[in-house]
Image (tube, rainbow, N blue to C red; front, side, top):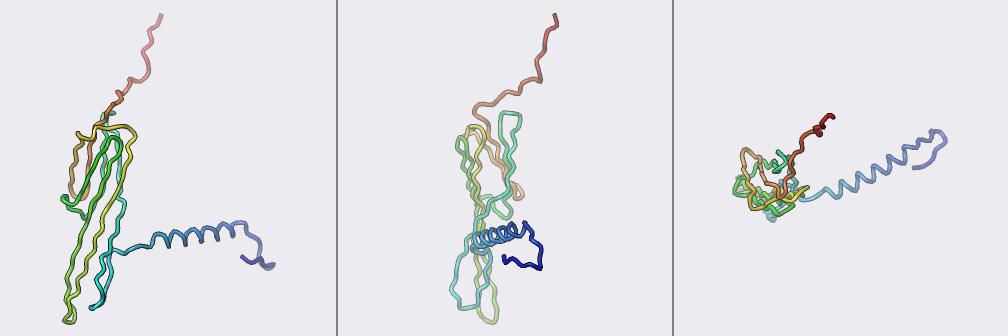
Length: 162
């Protein structure tokens, strides 16, 4: 920023410049392969692959198990890989799209592969071999029992009056 006498000094100018630089760094970093790419006939085929992190909610139900719901829209049940260890849940789901269009006598084939990947660390140890999962309408629900469930204590202590 160049100091000019006809303008008042604003201490937030420096902060704005720094914010613009940070935004530019993240813009460049987040640029990656696109999900859809348009190619003219005759161009080389290129497969683009993009992974996203799905939204997840983790609930502690009754103190004896965790219930995790994960949004995986557009994924078939057969394309989901789920792995549970004593303290971590690994989710990977792949989507594949293929489309053939005929235009001006040429056939254009468009494909993309994308999907979801997520690693969720659990706050307590669980029993991985007893985990259960259900997938319905784009939502994966995972139920995992805790290894050492904490019994909920009664509120307060009953005190005998002398």
